[in-house]
Amino acid sequence: MNARTMTSRPPLCIQMHEADNVAIVANDGGLPAGTTLPAGVTLVDAVPQAHKVALQDIAQGGVVRRYNVPIGYAIRAIPAGSWVHEKLLDMPDARSLEGLPIATVKPAALPPLTGYTFEGYRNADGSVGTRNILAITETVQCVAGVTEFAVQRIKAELLPKYPNVNDVVALAHTYGCGVAIDAPDAVIPIRTLRNISLNPNFGGEVMVVSLGCEKLQPERLLPPGSIPLVDERTQADTPLDVVCLQDEAHVGFMSMVDSVMRQAERHLQRLNQRRREPVPASELVVGVQCGGSDAFSGVTANPAVGFCTDLLVRAGATVMFSEVTEVRDGIDQLTARASTPEVAEAMIREMAWYDAYLQRGRVDRSANTTPGNKKGGLSNIVEKAMGSIVKSGSSPITGVISPGEKLQQKGLIYAATPASDFICGTLQVAAGMNLHVFTTGRGTPYGLAEVPVIKVATRDDLARRWHDLMDVNAGTIATGEKTIEDVGWEMFHLMLEVASGRKKTWAEHWKLRNALVLFNPAPVT
Ligand code: CA
Image 1 (cartoon, helix red, strand yellow):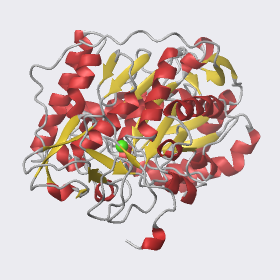
Image 2 (tube, helix red, strand yellow):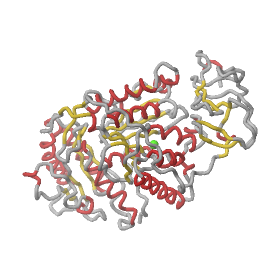
Image 3 (cartoon, helix red, strand yellow):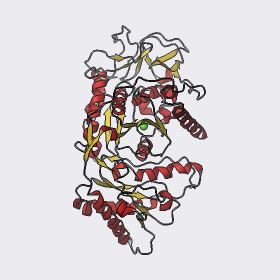
Image 4 (spheres, protein in one colour):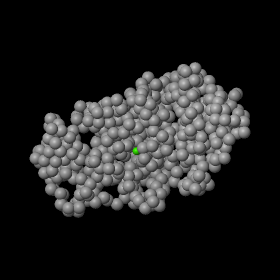
């Protein structure tokens, strides 16, 4: 490490719990060997930013403790002041799913938070959109090229006539054919696609582009009764709006494109009638997740998200947290916080299902961590999980949904999903989120076409370099300029602005759109 990259700030270390025997170095560029920390320990190694330093001598086999949790066991003796990196640690086994504490913690009810509103689009089914988007559902990947061609023309030729519609989006995916559609787990991708079509940001206007010969036929994707009525007078007996490319009426490519455009215009006309109206903050449905995490994630951004989660729950809103492999090592904390034994049992069921799913591929939750995570100071999945789980705040967990299911209740919900950023985001879109909050330490330019994404940087340095990609800088918590509460409130206010359409996120500004990626645990053929 080059001395010129060292910050001029005094040495800064963050210890998460008084029982911890490691702390992380907060200074940009890390700290050189020989630095004496405020705690009195002198570094024997250079320690990179976000990496751990031993605050005391740790014997061979001794516990390395962060967040007051054993994150590993020392492979050899680690003297005080040493850099404690992943190669020095043996990872603890996963917590057994037997004998967990069930609904034992009863957090004191926080006072309701009233008076906060945003400007949203009310839907016939009672949900509220934060954007007014025409989404075109696809039954199968085969139609993606034609649909995208039509979407480009709709945007150029039709959208300007309907100024109250924000966007037109093709819901492209890789499912629909060449898959074992009757396998038990196929229910996951199918219901995911169905529920994405019904996301509140699409106003109940469902139109489908189908090939014709695919396994996922339109009526299997959206059976009668699955679409809430937009308008009882016009929609009552109206069949599903499907453009079928193999229809004999289509002669030539342009006739397909014209069909898609003609049908799209009918929906644009209705969507254009929608207006924003003041709605209580309780109509927010926020999906939280992290990606490109580092050791700051659990110190700055995720605790601030956790504080904001509690604000949202107090306001009567819905918050989903997800990412099975990133909460698996904290399952005991979650089952203890479940509001009822049924909620705890549902969480255990989701974890057991995922354990078995990983086992089929001969891996376990340790397959989660990335080279970037490790470079960012996260030694293993236990340490990563402890930092990830704090996004859920401190409220009781009142519900659990399985991958691809749609939310049926408000409050703090565990939405079981893989931790993969794209798959987690896709499943949260299906669950009905109307706002997404995404924390990152290494940095990812993630964005979605369907739902606004607020991105939160865990470090000052990232927020500075990616000044036109990150919406919130939680790095100010590590430097002491702001508190977790300050940044949590900042996020809360920003959410209301973004939800109201008064402010665009950076991902919206640049139109950064990651693909929808389905979770398909069933076989392909
Ligand atoms: Ca993730």
